[in-house]
Image (cartoon, rainbow, N blue to C red; front, side, top):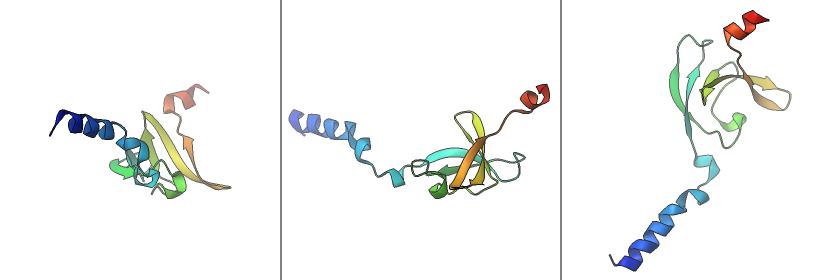
Length: 91
């Protein structure tokens, strides 16, 4: 490949992620369906919102070190941050 073609190819690769369909972007998170007793890794679609993510009400997922419980809200599913037990005991 010539130097010009290689440079053009590198330029295309640099911006490839800008045009990805958001419905195809998946994030790997830890998910528990038994109140945090057991965990499994699952790829979910966070770019579309919780209703289309693949998570179900009652499940807990861990994202960026924080835990959230999925519940059914008035306008669809919502994620509620799970407080640590020590913080609850201080109250």
